[in-house]
Structure formats: structure tokens, C-alpha cells
Image (cartoon, rainbow, N blue to C red; front, top):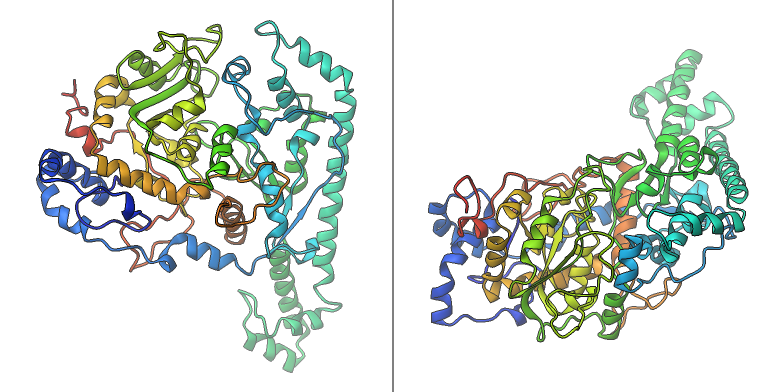
Length: 597
């Protein structure tokens, strides 16, 4: 299946809010029946033949709710409820003194000038405070299953510090690095950077030695005592009976072999994984600084394959930093997060317009592994100026103020956040890599994501806890590039009941994908009648502890194995691709295949 677009005929699925599903009139049902028959295929299989759609309608509509205990999310949490972690900072100072509100978003025009904003990558800042409250946290590293280094890399990683300072202080001339170089020299960046990176190597090395010392001490004073202590806890290669026999016979050779096996087993069990908070993979993968300033190399050298991290994104073709094991949500645009704080987490849909929205640059893709502008962004420009499509694609970095909108005849401007708040559908084209912060902003704003990125699934976080395909519309890149206007018309033609249910599912998932649930990142969120708290920190910990426990390092691999009686809608965390597919809601408009117009 590619997507799971909901039905308005028959019962709702788990997580749907029945209060917002409109009852269709006879006329409305009659005019929408063709669309519904096509849409139903997405709930039961994207490859369903048109002749089978009617036969499958009853089957799809009759599906009951997924039992909470039968979800991958429940299984992962159950498997890690007794796991432990130790959270620590390597340093208690900020050598580079990068000041500014880099956890908040600047005006749109400043984002265009800098090409990005650091706030979208700052999930570690929002994660630190909730970590302190988790009951699985322990006070010493030797008692932990997972070590989590919680330092803010803006403070201690030279490349990250330079990136964040630069985005807050754009250069006066395109292509110049004069302001950045002057600031770096002024703070003594090279000297401080070399010192802090060398200190990080030493401190991480000391931590590893302490852990290895505890592991060695736990093996026992003698081989015989080591074998005896393992007699009630047999290793994978030594049974309890074999140990008892060797102890009774006094066979030194057998006892020695058993002790060695026990030592090996103990060593495996005591080996710790180090998780560190890397905002985006390229902050280590493309550290454009001298070797002595590369913090990423230090973590790799000291902990090697025992290091693991979650990132907001990585480049095409998979991670280049070997420690990347999964992704986490981008941080939501601060203006959208502020509104959710003001409304108690409730999105109002009554003033939304039946329109699509996009605001961004055309250049994305040229700076990533693709090296060229993406087809989806080029095609988006065709929607500029069309009725019901509030779309603006900046031609290049010289276009100036991103706030100036070509649809505005009175000089008014549509901001990025306001456009998402006021629109029903938001375009999510691929950029330098298949993912985008936009999809998280759209969900926060209650704007249905229309994803034009074939391989975004490998980058979507918490796929084992969020049924992404049930709340997004995914359009194959080739289909959109061939007929962007026709695709946009098909989006706007979706029945109101489908729109309502898509919104309901996004509402249910919103706080699994939102980090900034407080006014400041160092505060603690307390759930209440008018306050909703993010579930992302718990999901982050569940996943990292589960991956460390089972050794799952592939970001695209499932996190749970399907069981015999699992529901058809069970999400296991595996990825998918939209390339070569054709969702029925596009097929019914003749938008796919060789005959598509």
C-alpha cells in the first residue's frame, strides 16, 4: 500500500474523530460515489483493479479499531519499560558564545537570505528537559543500558557553531564569508575549537575506560567463581547442566572454558551504546573545518560502532555518518507552535480556505546529492497565479523578499506560517533531500500534507508509532512533473468527508511529532486541561533503547515483526517508495501512465 486515505462510507478507523465527519446528503453521496470507490483502494491496497473496488468497499468499511496493545508502539514501549539510560553533558561551558534566539524562526525574508534557519534542527534543545523526568534515567553510567550525551552542539562543535552564527548574521555580499570569518577570529575560534575537541576526546575516552573497568570487575576474582556465578544464568553456548557437571567433577579445563564463555557473554552484555544528539547529519558528514576541529571524528574514533544518533535528515541514498540509525521530527515553526500553545493544542478549521499553499525557493535540490533543481519545485511554479492555489516559488536567491507574493495585487503579503494556517492543503515537495520540515509544520497547522517526494518514507520519524500513510496524500514525482495543474485539481476535488478524516488523523498524531510544546526549551511541560505535552521525547527514548537492545541500525528497517493476528493496518516502522505507483484518487482523473495528459 502507498497510502491509506480514509473512507466516509462505513465506520471510522481507530483514532478518527466522529464529531467532525459530516453526514452526506443523498445528492452529495451520489456525486461523490465515483471518488469514494477509487479512494477505497488506498485503504485495502494501492494496486486494486477498478473492477474490484466495489467488492472491497464493505471489507474496508467493516474494519474495526486496532487494539492498542497490538500496535508496534505498545510493543516497543513494553520491551523498553525496564531499560535504563544515563544522560550527561561533557562540558558545562560555552566556548564559542553563540548568542541569539536560534530556537525561534526569523522573518521569511531572512530565511531566504540565509537559505535555512537553525531552529528547524534544534530538537536536542527541546529534548533535554523531558529526559530529566523519564523514570528510566539512572544516576550512574555503569547501571545504564544506554548513554546519552546531551551537550548542545552549538556550544561545543565548531562547524555547528559557525553555521548557527552565520544564519543569524547573513553576509552583505552573496558568496562572501567575511562577517563569519571576522567573528570566528574575534572569538578565537580555531584555538578554542581545537581545545574543546581535544578535551571531548579525552573525556569520552575516560568514560569508556570507566565502563570497561566496571565490566572487567564484574567478571569475578577467579575463573571458578566466574563459572559458578554463571551457573544460574547460562550463556548462549553453556547450559546450566554443563556448568554443574564441571563444578562437580573439578575439571579445570572445563571450568576454564566455561569461565571464558561467561566472560565473553558478560562483555557483550556490558558493552554500552553511546547516543548523542546530532541535529542534522550534514553537521558531521560535511564538517567543512580542519581535522582538529571535527567533533564527529572524535565520537567515531572513541566509540566506533557503539555510537548511535537520531537526526532530522540525511542525504540521498542513506546516511553517510555511520552512527545515524534513525530520524526524528524537525522542530515546528515557532509561530505555529506559539499558536498551539495559545489554543491548548487545538487547531480550528472553520476559517480555512479550500486552497493549496506553498512558499519557498526553487533552488532546493541543486545543493544536495542531486546537484540539480528538483522536478517537483519546477512544476510547482506552474500553479502560481491560479485560482485556489496560493503558491509562490522564488526563482533564485536574488528574488529578494520572500514575503512579496505574486498573487497580491494590493501589496499584501502571505507569510509562511499564515499560509499554512489558512489553507486546507500544503505542498511538500522534495528539496536537497527527500524530506522537509514543511510536513511537520503542515501537521501542526492542520494543513493536509500533499507530498511530492517518492522516497520521503525513509526519512519520516516514528513510522512504528505514526501511521503516516493514513494522514498524507503522496503524489509520485513523475506524475506531478507531467501534470501539476491536473494533480492540483484532483487534490481540490477530494470530498469533504475525506478531508475531515485526514484532519482527524493528523490531530491524533500531532503531539507525537511536535517538540516545542513550551514557551522556552529549558522549561518542563505539565499536561493539563489547557496544556498538551509532546510525546516525541518518550518515542525517541523508546526507539533508541529498543534499537540499542536489539542492534537495529538500519533507518529504513521495521522496528517490529508482524505477528499472525496483527491487523491489516499494523505499522511496523518499515519504509516504502512512491516511485512508479499511481494512487487511485489520481488514476480516476487519468493522471497516471503513458496515456496521462
